[in-house]
Length: 402
Ligand code: PMP
Image (cartoon, rainbow, N blue to C red):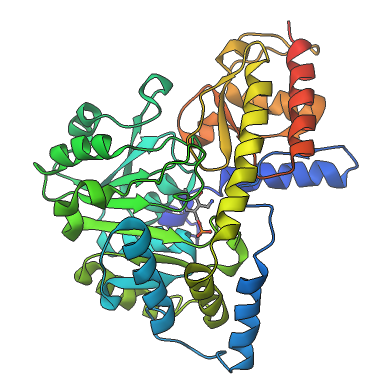
């Protein structure tokens, strides 16, 4: 028994480590320290003008009221057209629901399906929020370590070994935050073959970084590789990363009718519909000129190439080439066991991250937050000058180790 007035399901979870790292960096900056913040996980571009104008036009037309819970017909038509055009997937409007960001879509999908103790397979490294979302919905996250040698991806053997009668979901995030790793169609097929033997397992695809890719490839969708699993897959996506719209809070879920209907019921009794003005902006983003996507991805690619070269030139650090997203997941195994000028031994990646912050003012996030150590995540969603300064400082800090 505890006297806490906060429910156990909330006491089980912790605030996002990336938010905490950003807060710490901002606090040091307020104290007057020179900080290079490489924590942020959002595009540093402004939302394109034609999208902002669509929001203004919606307000001027009086679209300032409640919308249908699932989202306006215009937005869901735009999402359906996008899924058809870009992913070759066909969804009816009643198989799509708009949510306040992909984050709330993922959380709500767990909320409508998990019974206490149900397991969710989360390949690690994972986006920091997944395990806590599962815990907040009374589920049990089952993390599966996917080492760098396997491209940070779950293998069919690992999946088969992780599935139990209590498994409810497999979560797939491609390209991944934090590693940028992305699955190929063949890899998806091999996973689908394992899933075919376990009809109780649902699949959640977090497609939020699908357009942020550096190899000129189109990110294959799990359902293109395994259309037979359509009835047990939720495809989750949103406009945040692709169109630099993190503040607008529009995501969506496409999936079988019963799950989408349950999401509609839950959300109708909790958040209600997502922002009407943002919905109009998101529809314009999906239907409109896509040149921003190509241009911004070209900029991310330049940054990735420049930063990757600098990091890989630092003794003790190495980074696998990310296929997409806007992060480097940097192996710092070569620094573990070294001693700082102050005489502190670096025992784990959290120590490395603290040392970088305190000695040279570079803020990054420790691999422990993502479930695979020893690594740290560096965001490249910032200017090339900031990235160069960050790399120069890291090189200086590493050179001072003994
Ligand atoms: N999934 C992943 C992997 C992410 O990195 C993020 C944003 N950090 C989200 C989902 C959430 O996106 P949204 O802004 O649409 O809630």
